[in-house]
Image (cartoon, rainbow, N blue to C red; front, side, top):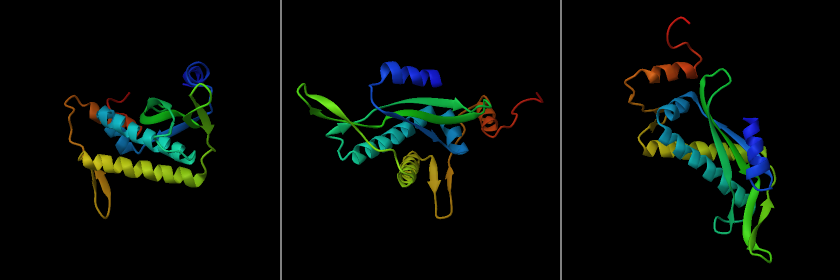
Length: 176
């Protein structure tokens, strides 16, 4: 993992400050993402757009005048080989705004590291946007007392049982 990140930062990504963001999810969402990868892809888009919009706004620009970028690794397992889907995102620590200068190239504008209050706002925004998306898809039901996922089994092979056991560190099949 670290070697891949170093390759990206040293040889592929622009020579600009980069911050790693890690986004983990509750067990129920990990299970949903494992069984419905298209939903996971849409949630990754929500995470990226939320963070990119924050960077652009923090730099004092709009989406018309500035851009940022990221590379994301979707890690499917934790250190115990349990199902634990989470995102490792290398996000530019600023924005390219412009064009500026004699050659018309955009200039990089770094932003300050996020403060705790900003991180809390970002987590809240990502949670709310993800929840609204899942509601529109009919996958999440929210009422006054609680929220729950609506997951109808599509798996006839028993893989969902194994995935569910893996998330909670339980042995799914056999005594070994």
